[in-house]
Amino acid sequence: MPSDERASRSVALAVSKALHVPAADVPLLLANLPVTLPRRFEDAEAREIVSTLAALGADTEITQRSGGVTHCAVHLELEASARCGRCDAPRCALCCAGGDALCPGCRRKAQRSRVFFHLRLTFLLGVLAIVVLWAQRDVTRRKARTDWTQTLSVAIVVLRVGPIDAALTEKLRDRVPALEQRLADEYRRYGGASQAPFRVELYGPLDVPSGTPEQPREGIADLVRYTFDLWRYVRDVNRRVALSASTVDSSIYVVARPARDGRPALVEGTSEEGGKIGIVEVELGEDMADFALFVAAHELLHTLGATDKYDAHGRAVVPAGLAEPERIPLYPQRFAEVMARNVALGPTTERAPSTLDELRVGRATAREIGWVR
Image 1 (cartoon, rainbow, N blue to C red):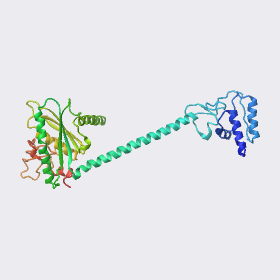
Image 2: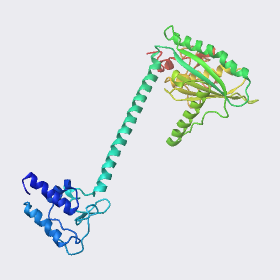
Image 3: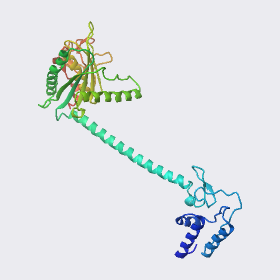
Image 4: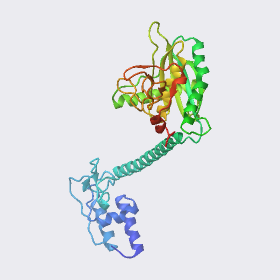
């Protein structure tokens, strides 16, 4: 190749004009000589290119094949010497410069694909970071609930399914202060501070066509669907009763249905240990307000990390499920441990608590929720 800069530019311009390739690409083309020109070049034109290169000191030759030439898909004046590894388009020596296996079009697509991949990866990593930070903050806030440095805010939301006398739901509201006081007395019994452990506010009643979504017994896919359905259900309920979930530490949803004549009223609940939501299903009849709030307290303590204190048969485990495990004789018990739900009258005999005055928090439960260290 010529060493003089002016001569080099002359070579580039001459080859660029003759072969219709960008002048900036000519050095790559010359670095990959010899190149066979398509048949459509006149002999005089080919000789002119060779003479120009020779006059400028390019030690090479450009030959012309007599037939069977495949043109480059990009540089139409040059013979193809390879094919694109992706689209199989014919490529010339210029397109193959640098050892790239792709044609310029596929190379640009690959570059765009890489850019898009990196953008997408960056976005997903950003979302993941936000989720991790949010989850860490949420877990920290949940754990902070059992530090008992401040009063916890609890919402009890009454959902009315079917015709229920308004006086029955008002009894629930009237008994909320008694629940607050009973829990405060238990808190102080374990040496709690003078501040109240809970501030409970009742919302509703809100008339709804059906209760909360039914929780599946097994299957991860069903559980994921249930979690999403419950989130949508609760979000709608909160909006309708003007409850901001971010302002409360736990929310207990009491689904109240009419009591069935001639049958014992049913009360049951479910919640996630350490979560923020508890659900109570109750057939709300006369004298059921205290028991419904007792079960609400049971679910509330579940959200703070307390575990059930009854066995597979529903009977209180000994000693954790007894309100007075040191009592002599042991039975009958006088009170109901909140996480065992019933008053144990004997090893196999129990009854439901009749008033909130019978609610007690056992030592094992107190330890689980941070009242005992």
